[in-house]
Image 1 (cartoon, rainbow, N blue to C red):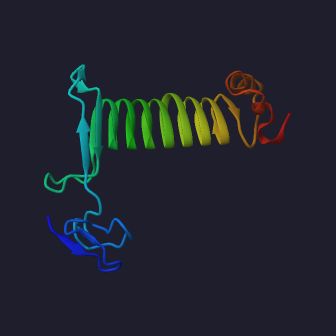
Image 2: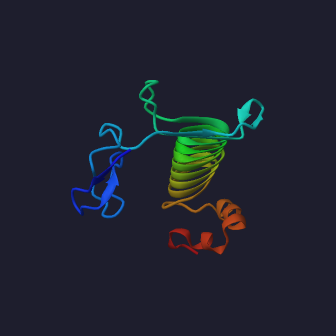
Length: 176
């Protein structure tokens, strides 16, 4: 490693640095413009049911030909995450949180839950979202057996959601 002057501020910086630590000016070194950040991969050695307790996979591996980091573990965090607790762009598991999530309990932009779905588009036995589809559904457009939505407010749904969400449910949609 050698020290070179920064093109912007003139201070000494490493020839491997992607940017000057003093002024932040990019050097054009240290990173490949096609891959603006490096992939990050980490997992615990401890396992449960043959899966690592924690698996983190962010960014793909161009050498392996992968575009996304896929994490599989009890707790999985990654571009694509599969686990008991899964957090990622696409998350699949018991509790799934992500842009697209599928699981028993799902939270995300598109949340497909078996028991509970919370998101812009949500499905589940209990669904809460802009478009909510479930046995008990609450949202702008709610579809189900018992719904609280822009067009209707089922008394059984009001009572169900009031138990969990409090008195604010009674005023949903401006109704009393």
